[in-house]
Amino acid sequence: MSRLVIFCLFSIVSVALAHGGSHHGASAKPRTFNFNVKGDNCTDVISHVAAGRKFTTFGGNVAHAIHSITVNMLRKFEPSVGKENHVPVVDLDLRSETPLLEHAPMDEQSPFETEGMQLIDAVLNHMDNRDYDVRGFTILERVVHAFHMVEGYEMIVKEYKALKEAGGVPDDVCACLNDIEHNGIRKALRFIALAIREPALVYNAPTLAAYYVPYQVTYRFLNDKVKDTAKVFNPDELLLDQTDSMPALKDQESWKVWKKLLTSMETDMHQDAALFLYCRLNKFK
Image 1 (cartoon, rainbow, N blue to C red):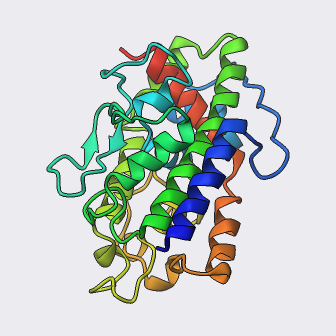
Image 2 (cartoon, rainbow, N blue to C red):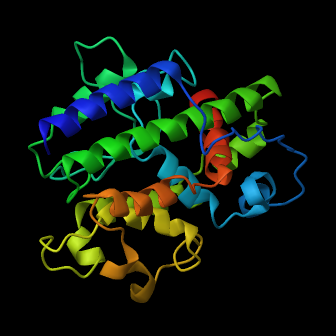
């Protein structure tokens, strides 16, 4: 990447984070939650409270939202969050023996003052490591991904604050939302970790020389083919093809494809993530 591109990224993203901004133009109004649940099991409970009244998409929505979150970002929700936060994430060290971490990690120390520069610092500190973050991503794509996630967190915070001001989530509902072994969240995180670590296998690309973006697989939960985390994936659904991925981010035309996807994230993701994070940070037992 040229020095000019790096300089422009520094300037644009630092200003963007310093001044905030809206997501997809005008911000959506936070959802009003209804916890008058009628049901005998967690499937019924989640089907009632989840965005879109869908149990099957809840796990994928939450997993995408939290898969790379850190303690600093969690402190936007609850300032007292520490090392033992019980928010599971994908391990960014792609060679580790722990594909999933049980707690979101602490952020690396940075000499910078603004959130934008701290985020850039966190990405560029590992820019030569091909086994970190998302395998196959260029440094430009890593930067775009990092800021995409931060934008999503800002939207989730709005839903979270509205939820908290309305009285939070009842204990019985939180018991279901916290049960990540059975509500689809851990299954979705495992799938994301697999795609990030082994894109060549998932996308049937023996080498990455031709380049197809592996991270796109996490967005496939938006597609009917793999979004149902309540069922067992069969090989035809789990193993995708190069045509299922985005193009390399190398010019204006490829950016149009990326931008269309990154601005099409549904508010359901933000709302489901807010529900889960409220329960995880306030009522985890």
